[in-house]
Image (cartoon, rainbow, N blue to C red):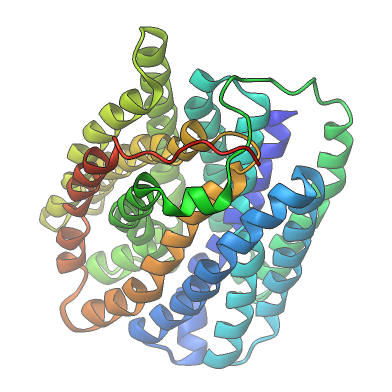
Length: 392
């Protein structure tokens, strides 16, 4: 049942990543440069930022089943609308509307982990969301290549949208067979206002913003990197995506397993997750040497190391609010982190595009490598200033 729920992450990232997979072909038809493509991602980031807390609150109020079904229907229909666009403005609007629904994706999987998994299992359970991410991004590459070759790039949006709608009846069937919810000592309610006042909350948000450069860059721009740097075709560049996603999958399960083992050995959950995050932050520095890669193969190896580390760190960072604030506000607490992703994309995407247009991608590789260490420092500085528990 939990595995089926986490397949919603596949749909989420399929609808999101299909744009990236077809974007080189689409940019040619629309005559867009990298900076203009970055503005499309910025529109997504803006609405993702604004929608995340609202959708987190919505999920906590209406429940996992109804909230997820509504959100997934919204983003699937909005995703198909991108196939009808004819220029930059229409693409920005439709892709932005996708963000409204997709902002519920990560909070819903976090709420599922809080609802059905024990505390020590949650980070490795959240790694199942990475399975969904890998499936979604891999499907995006194959669907894009097949559709571009046979029906044109617009058809990829329609295929992705219908796959999303098919998930809803599957989940409703599975949810009827769900086991009794796991009761945990820390799962009593927390006041939303107290969560927002807690310094550790803002520590999580800032750390997430500082951490996400690796993820945002390599998920949104990897195929552009290979096309620009090594003059590869769109088809060949898209074929590399499954390799990177498979490595990310191993990284997420490794990070979840590592924190679970530390907790089982007596570590406090938040301390265990911070320790795993530190090792992830060190590994993400490998991104700085990617521009030195002499071939696509070496570039894949170096990117994979940083992507592995990013995934290991991320599953633990996104589990920290669950450890801190419990079940009744789980979706809202995690939605604050996803809002940080929207904030980063709001500013970073057009900047990445502008730098790539003028200087290539090497400066970006270096720029995203070191902020995760600042993120770890932020987590350490705010760790002893937790919010006081307040009954809802």
